[in-house]
Length: 298
Image (cartoon, rainbow, N blue to C red; front, top):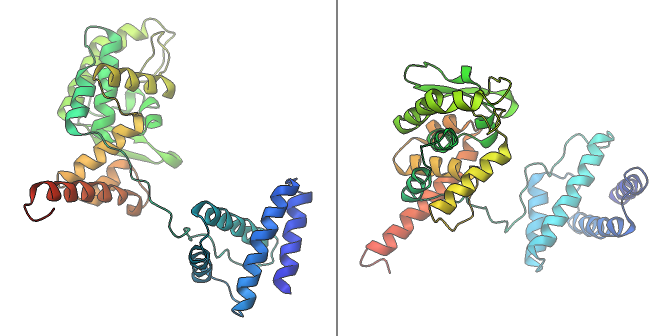
Protein backbone atom coordinates (compact mmCIF):
# COMPACT_ATOMS: atom_id res chain seq x y z
CA UNK A 1 0.00 0.00 0.00
CA UNK A 2 2.89 2.37 0.74
CA UNK A 3 4.33 1.89 -2.75
CA UNK A 4 0.91 2.43 -4.30
CA UNK A 5 0.52 5.71 -2.40
CA UNK A 6 3.95 6.90 -3.54
CA UNK A 7 3.16 6.00 -7.13
CA UNK A 8 -0.02 8.09 -7.01
CA UNK A 9 1.96 11.05 -5.61
CA UNK A 10 4.46 10.71 -8.43
CA UNK A 11 1.76 10.49 -11.11
CA UNK A 12 -0.03 13.58 -9.74
CA UNK A 13 3.26 15.48 -9.69
CA UNK A 14 4.09 14.37 -13.22
CA UNK A 15 0.66 15.35 -14.56
CA UNK A 16 0.12 18.64 -12.73
CA UNK A 17 3.58 20.12 -12.22
CA UNK A 18 5.43 18.68 -15.20
CA UNK A 19 2.49 18.78 -17.58
CA UNK A 20 2.93 15.33 -19.07
CA UNK A 21 0.26 14.06 -21.48
CA UNK A 22 -2.45 11.58 -20.55
CA UNK A 23 -0.77 8.91 -22.67
CA UNK A 24 2.55 9.41 -20.87
CA UNK A 25 0.86 9.20 -17.47
CA UNK A 26 -0.91 6.00 -18.53
CA UNK A 27 2.39 4.46 -19.64
CA UNK A 28 4.02 5.47 -16.34
CA UNK A 29 1.12 3.93 -14.43
CA UNK A 30 1.42 0.61 -16.28
CA UNK A 31 5.17 0.45 -15.67
CA UNK A 32 4.91 1.35 -12.00
CA UNK A 33 1.98 -0.96 -11.27
CA UNK A 34 4.03 -3.82 -12.70
CA UNK A 35 6.93 -2.72 -10.47
CA UNK A 36 4.63 -2.62 -7.43
CA UNK A 37 3.32 -6.11 -8.21
CA UNK A 38 6.89 -7.41 -8.45
CA UNK A 39 7.77 -5.95 -5.03
CA UNK A 40 4.55 -7.17 -3.45
CA UNK A 41 4.85 -10.72 -4.82
CA UNK A 42 8.38 -11.05 -3.43
CA UNK A 43 7.63 -9.19 -0.17
CA UNK A 44 10.47 -6.76 -0.93
CA UNK A 45 10.67 -3.67 1.28
CA UNK A 46 14.24 -2.46 0.80
CA UNK A 47 15.00 -1.67 -2.84
CA UNK A 48 18.59 -1.51 -4.06
CA UNK A 49 20.36 -1.82 -7.42
CA UNK A 50 20.36 -5.63 -7.20
CA UNK A 51 16.58 -5.67 -6.84
CA UNK A 52 16.13 -3.35 -9.82
CA UNK A 53 18.48 -5.50 -11.93
CA UNK A 54 16.59 -8.68 -10.96
CA UNK A 55 13.31 -7.00 -11.87
CA UNK A 56 14.61 -6.10 -15.33
CA UNK A 57 15.94 -9.61 -15.78
CA UNK A 58 12.48 -10.91 -14.93
CA UNK A 59 10.97 -8.67 -17.58
CA UNK A 60 13.40 -10.04 -20.13
CA UNK A 61 12.48 -13.63 -19.21
CA UNK A 62 8.82 -12.67 -19.69
CA UNK A 63 9.67 -11.72 -23.26
CA UNK A 64 9.62 -7.94 -22.95
CA UNK A 65 11.36 -6.21 -25.84
CA UNK A 66 14.61 -4.33 -25.22
CA UNK A 67 12.92 -1.02 -26.04
CA UNK A 68 10.19 -1.74 -23.48
CA UNK A 69 12.77 -2.64 -20.83
CA UNK A 70 14.59 0.61 -21.54
CA UNK A 71 11.34 2.51 -21.06
CA UNK A 72 10.57 0.59 -17.85
CA UNK A 73 13.98 1.51 -16.44
CA UNK A 74 13.49 5.14 -17.46
CA UNK A 75 10.15 5.18 -15.61
CA UNK A 76 11.74 3.70 -12.49
CA UNK A 77 14.50 6.33 -12.63
CA UNK A 78 11.98 9.14 -12.84
CA UNK A 79 9.98 7.66 -9.96
CA UNK A 80 12.92 7.13 -7.62
CA UNK A 81 14.48 10.50 -8.42
CA UNK A 82 11.14 12.06 -7.51
CA UNK A 83 11.17 10.22 -4.17
CA UNK A 84 14.68 11.47 -3.39
CA UNK A 85 13.86 15.05 -4.45
CA UNK A 86 10.76 15.07 -2.24
CA UNK A 87 12.62 13.64 0.76
CA UNK A 88 10.60 10.43 0.61
CA UNK A 89 13.73 8.32 0.05
CA UNK A 90 17.41 8.81 0.73
CA UNK A 91 18.92 7.01 -2.27
CA UNK A 92 18.09 6.24 -5.90
CA UNK A 93 18.61 2.49 -6.53
CA UNK A 94 18.44 2.89 -10.31
CA UNK A 95 21.48 5.13 -10.74
CA UNK A 96 24.02 2.47 -11.73
CA UNK A 97 21.63 0.01 -13.40
CA UNK A 98 21.87 -0.85 -17.12
CA UNK A 99 18.96 -2.60 -18.80
CA UNK A 100 19.69 -6.31 -19.46
CA UNK A 101 20.39 -7.13 -23.06
CA UNK A 102 21.54 -3.63 -23.86
CA UNK A 103 24.37 -3.90 -26.35
CA UNK A 104 27.43 -1.78 -25.93
CA UNK A 105 27.97 0.28 -29.02
CA UNK A 106 31.54 -0.03 -30.20
CA UNK A 107 33.23 3.02 -31.66
CA UNK A 108 34.09 2.91 -35.34
CA UNK A 109 37.76 3.28 -36.19
CA UNK A 110 39.44 3.75 -39.53
CA UNK A 111 42.36 1.58 -40.53
CA UNK A 112 45.83 3.12 -40.44
CA UNK A 113 45.83 3.10 -44.24
CA UNK A 114 42.50 4.95 -44.34
CA UNK A 115 43.73 7.60 -41.90
CA UNK A 116 46.86 8.09 -43.97
CA UNK A 117 44.80 8.42 -47.14
CA UNK A 118 42.40 10.84 -45.42
CA UNK A 119 45.21 13.12 -44.27
CA UNK A 120 47.34 12.97 -47.39
CA UNK A 121 44.37 13.73 -49.64
CA UNK A 122 44.53 17.32 -48.40
CA UNK A 123 46.64 19.57 -50.69
CA UNK A 124 49.25 21.88 -49.19
CA UNK A 125 49.32 24.64 -51.80
CA UNK A 126 46.90 27.04 -50.06
CA UNK A 127 46.51 28.46 -46.54
CA UNK A 128 43.22 26.54 -46.24
CA UNK A 129 44.92 23.30 -47.25
CA UNK A 130 47.71 23.87 -44.73
CA UNK A 131 45.09 24.48 -42.04
CA UNK A 132 43.09 21.40 -42.93
CA UNK A 133 46.15 19.17 -42.94
CA UNK A 134 47.19 20.56 -39.53
CA UNK A 135 43.73 19.91 -38.06
CA UNK A 136 43.56 16.35 -39.35
CA UNK A 137 47.08 15.53 -38.20
CA UNK A 138 46.52 17.11 -34.79
CA UNK A 139 43.20 15.39 -34.07
CA UNK A 140 44.54 11.98 -35.05
CA UNK A 141 47.83 12.51 -33.21
CA UNK A 142 46.27 13.64 -29.93
CA UNK A 143 42.77 12.13 -29.94
CA UNK A 144 41.40 15.62 -29.31
CA UNK A 145 37.66 16.20 -29.28
CA UNK A 146 36.46 18.58 -31.97
CA UNK A 147 35.56 21.19 -29.34
CA UNK A 148 39.05 20.90 -27.87
CA UNK A 149 40.64 21.43 -31.27
CA UNK A 150 38.62 24.51 -32.25
CA UNK A 151 39.08 26.05 -28.78
CA UNK A 152 42.87 26.00 -29.06
CA UNK A 153 44.65 29.33 -29.04
CA UNK A 154 48.19 29.96 -30.19
CA UNK A 155 49.42 30.12 -26.58
CA UNK A 156 48.22 26.53 -26.02
CA UNK A 157 51.04 25.38 -28.25
CA UNK A 158 53.99 24.74 -25.95
CA UNK A 159 57.65 24.99 -26.90
CA UNK A 160 57.15 26.87 -30.18
CA UNK A 161 60.44 25.66 -31.62
CA UNK A 162 59.44 22.01 -31.88
CA UNK A 163 55.78 21.85 -30.81
CA UNK A 164 56.49 18.79 -28.66
CA UNK A 165 53.29 19.13 -26.63
CA UNK A 166 50.07 21.12 -26.61
CA UNK A 167 47.54 21.96 -23.91
CA UNK A 168 43.97 20.74 -24.45
CA UNK A 169 41.02 21.95 -22.38
CA UNK A 170 38.44 19.20 -22.02
CA UNK A 171 35.16 18.66 -20.22
CA UNK A 172 34.75 20.63 -17.03
CA UNK A 173 37.55 22.96 -18.16
CA UNK A 174 40.08 20.34 -17.17
CA UNK A 175 43.40 20.89 -18.91
CA UNK A 176 45.82 18.23 -19.99
CA UNK A 177 49.14 18.37 -21.78
CA UNK A 178 49.44 15.89 -24.63
CA UNK A 179 52.38 15.00 -26.87
CA UNK A 180 52.33 15.77 -30.58
CA UNK A 181 53.98 13.39 -33.05
CA UNK A 182 56.35 14.34 -35.83
CA UNK A 183 53.77 14.42 -38.63
CA UNK A 184 51.46 16.67 -36.62
CA UNK A 185 54.39 18.88 -35.58
CA UNK A 186 55.42 19.37 -39.19
CA UNK A 187 51.86 20.15 -40.25
CA UNK A 188 51.37 22.64 -37.41
CA UNK A 189 54.67 24.37 -38.14
CA UNK A 190 53.78 24.71 -41.82
CA UNK A 191 50.35 26.11 -40.93
CA UNK A 192 51.71 28.56 -38.35
CA UNK A 193 54.40 29.85 -40.70
CA UNK A 194 52.62 29.89 -44.08
CA UNK A 195 48.91 29.33 -43.47
CA UNK A 196 47.67 31.13 -40.38
CA UNK A 197 49.26 34.53 -41.12
CA UNK A 198 47.50 34.65 -44.49
CA UNK A 199 44.15 33.78 -42.91
CA UNK A 200 44.68 36.15 -39.97
CA UNK A 201 45.20 39.06 -42.36
CA UNK A 202 41.62 38.65 -43.58
CA UNK A 203 40.08 39.13 -40.13
CA UNK A 204 40.21 41.50 -37.19
CA UNK A 205 42.70 39.53 -35.16
CA UNK A 206 42.05 36.60 -32.84
CA UNK A 207 44.21 34.34 -30.64
CA UNK A 208 42.42 31.24 -32.02
CA UNK A 209 44.86 28.72 -33.45
CA UNK A 210 42.67 27.51 -36.31
CA UNK A 211 41.06 30.20 -38.46
CA UNK A 212 38.32 30.22 -41.06
CA UNK A 213 38.52 31.63 -44.57
CA UNK A 214 37.57 35.11 -43.30
CA UNK A 215 40.11 35.15 -40.51
CA UNK A 216 37.76 34.34 -37.62
CA UNK A 217 37.88 31.30 -35.32
CA UNK A 218 37.02 28.00 -36.96
CA UNK A 219 33.73 26.40 -35.84
CA UNK A 220 32.94 22.78 -35.02
CA UNK A 221 30.71 22.63 -38.09
CA UNK A 222 33.67 23.70 -40.23
CA UNK A 223 35.69 20.75 -38.94
CA UNK A 224 32.89 18.33 -39.85
CA UNK A 225 32.92 19.72 -43.38
CA UNK A 226 36.72 19.53 -43.58
CA UNK A 227 36.69 15.85 -42.62
CA UNK A 228 33.79 15.07 -44.94
CA UNK A 229 35.61 16.70 -47.87
CA UNK A 230 38.83 14.83 -47.04
CA UNK A 231 36.92 11.53 -46.91
CA UNK A 232 35.45 12.20 -50.36
CA UNK A 233 38.89 12.97 -51.80
CA UNK A 234 40.27 9.79 -50.21
CA UNK A 235 37.29 7.80 -51.53
CA UNK A 236 36.33 6.62 -48.04
CA UNK A 237 32.67 5.64 -48.26
CA UNK A 238 32.06 5.13 -44.54
CA UNK A 239 30.36 8.00 -42.72
CA UNK A 240 33.02 9.57 -40.54
CA UNK A 241 33.15 12.52 -38.16
CA UNK A 242 35.74 14.29 -36.00
CA UNK A 243 35.08 11.67 -33.32
CA UNK A 244 36.15 8.98 -35.78
CA UNK A 245 39.70 10.36 -35.63
CA UNK A 246 39.57 10.26 -31.82
CA UNK A 247 38.38 6.64 -31.91
CA UNK A 248 41.05 5.75 -34.45
CA UNK A 249 43.79 7.34 -32.36
CA UNK A 250 42.81 5.35 -29.26
CA UNK A 251 42.36 2.09 -31.14
CA UNK A 252 45.68 2.32 -32.96
CA UNK A 253 47.54 3.19 -29.75
CA UNK A 254 46.15 0.13 -27.96
CA UNK A 255 46.86 -2.12 -30.92
CA UNK A 256 50.40 -0.80 -30.89
CA UNK A 257 50.87 -1.82 -27.26
CA UNK A 258 50.13 1.41 -25.37
CA UNK A 259 49.01 1.00 -21.76
CA UNK A 260 45.30 1.67 -21.29
CA UNK A 261 45.96 4.23 -18.55
CA UNK A 262 48.26 6.16 -20.87
CA UNK A 263 45.46 6.25 -23.44
CA UNK A 264 43.03 7.31 -20.69
CA UNK A 265 45.27 10.25 -19.82
CA UNK A 266 45.75 11.19 -23.45
CA UNK A 267 42.00 11.22 -24.18
CA UNK A 268 41.10 12.99 -20.95
CA UNK A 269 38.73 10.29 -19.71
CA UNK A 270 37.79 10.71 -16.05
CA UNK A 271 37.54 6.94 -15.62
CA UNK A 272 39.51 4.12 -17.20
CA UNK A 273 36.19 2.31 -17.66
CA UNK A 274 35.39 4.75 -20.47
CA UNK A 275 38.65 3.92 -22.19
CA UNK A 276 38.09 0.17 -21.86
CA UNK A 277 35.56 0.19 -24.69
CA UNK A 278 38.51 0.50 -27.07
CA UNK A 279 39.93 -2.77 -25.77
CA UNK A 280 36.78 -4.43 -27.14
CA UNK A 281 37.57 -3.01 -30.55
CA UNK A 282 41.14 -4.31 -30.51
CA UNK A 283 39.98 -7.67 -29.16
CA UNK A 284 37.52 -7.97 -32.04
CA UNK A 285 40.31 -7.20 -34.50
CA UNK A 286 42.54 -9.81 -32.84
CA UNK A 287 39.78 -12.43 -32.99
CA UNK A 288 39.09 -11.71 -36.65
CA UNK A 289 42.79 -11.93 -37.52
CA UNK A 290 43.06 -15.23 -35.64
CA UNK A 291 40.05 -16.73 -37.41
CA UNK A 292 41.41 -15.65 -40.77
CA UNK A 293 44.98 -16.85 -40.25
CA UNK A 294 44.88 -19.94 -38.02
CA UNK A 295 44.34 -23.23 -39.91
CA UNK A 296 42.15 -24.69 -37.14
CA UNK A 297 40.24 -21.56 -36.21
CA UNK A 298 37.51 -22.00 -38.83
